[in-house]
Amino acid sequence: MQKVLATILAVPILVLVYAGTAVRRARRRHAVMAFVALGLTGVLIATALRPTPATGTLPARISAVDPAEFTPIVETGEAPSAPVLISFPGAMNTASVERLVRIEPATSVSFGWDATATRFTITPRDTWALGKIHTVTVEAGALDATGRPLGHQIRSAFVTRRAVTATLSATAMMAGTTLAASHILIAFSGPVNATSVVLVTDPVIVGRIGVADGSTSARPAYEFIPTDPLPGGTIFTISLGAGVRDADDGPVTAEAATIQTAAAPAVVRFRPKTGATGVGWTQNLSVRFTEPMDRASTEAAWRVTQGTTAVAGKFAWAERDTVLVFNPTKSLGYSQKVALTVAVGATSKAGLPLASAASATFTTAPRPTSVTKTPGGSGDGVIGSSTWSAVEAFYLEIMNCTRTGGIVTSTGSCSSPGGRSVAPLWQDAGITTKVSRPYAKKLAVNNLCTHFSGGNPGDRLKAAGFASYVWAENLGCRSGDPYAAVLGSHLFFQSEASYSGGHYVNLMNAKYDRVGIGVWVSGGRVRLVVDFYHPL
Image 1 (cartoon, helix red, strand yellow):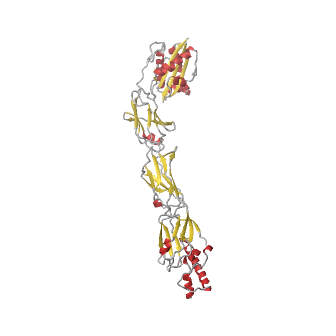
Image 2: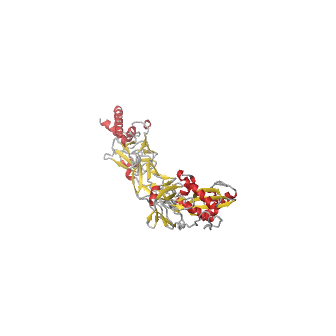
């Protein structure tokens, strides 16, 4: 028995380990020890059959089994911070083993031993390189506790798993820009240490990190939630903090990203523009912005006042929500100062508040004056110089009688005037002299009665410089006395009330605040041209 034990002591301990386990991961330790025990049993049997007397001289060949019979076991998908464990069947000279450990690729490690000097642990000071093959070698010559050397090197290998990566992105985008209310999504390709997740932004954004919808343990996702809306017109660089670690304490890689917020909206202009005078009392009001606007917040921030009185109205939007149009419910009145204001509560569709409040003021037109003529009379008109300008003024009077709720009689007088809440039309000198009169002359001279000689009414208005508008046109084509002719045409227009004929609808439409009136007589032919107009 003594001979057998002496022989056992002469067996190279590391070769037995290599035969059973070489270098294994800690999670295989039970299988390792079983294999080592099996190896020891084999050695006992071999030495029992061929005993060798114990001497003080180490044999030249100390391996009981040829190392060529063994190959390293390569393990894959290893955690980046897990230790490598080598189990020896007997106590080792720890310093000699540590001196002869070689690791590829080179990694800073620390060594540890148990109290029996049989369990040797190699732990990376940070982590093993991710996604790489690592080899751990114990060179020949390592000694056991009695001084017996290892006659050959032993080696094993393992492959670490790939690195966990992260992608960074904004959660709310519009037309390639980040919305002010956006969060920042941090999506990981594998499990992470949740307490280590940190986002770095430049410029700094104050906020907190929470778990994102759809996050799983295998593919976690987090959201950085800013405390305040993101400022407009800013480029941010976003990156993971240096200390973000995966579930195995390995580093997480992520490319830095940039996000750009939309510019804060601003007011381009008001219509009517600030300082304008002579504005029609049924004028639609509008404001144009640099960015598409959120309708609800912008309408809430809009205010129209006459003195201290708020003006009610209806909203409409145009040009992809960059223009708010306000149609007052009631007339603005004559010679009234009106203020338009948009407060900073108005936000863009990107969620950014107005850069600064904006306002404009304008003054409505005074009550128009005109010459009143009865059929068969004579007199001078008040707009331009025309033989029939007085007839034009007469027509303005009778037209406004009907428009404001009165009834024009066959004698040209106004019966029961007023009662209808709509502004009288006022005669625009520019439209009269540049559009309506010239066209009345053309119709009378050429014996025509059409809206479309050389184009439509809109074409004629545009050619005269009235390009932004809504318009309509009434024509009267009669002969004889000019006053009687325009009165007859008007009585016909007024008679359309029972079935809402087009002429009647035009002269009663509150959308229009001004008219051009042209009367021309040629060869006994009387032509009346009435161009209704409202600028945008």
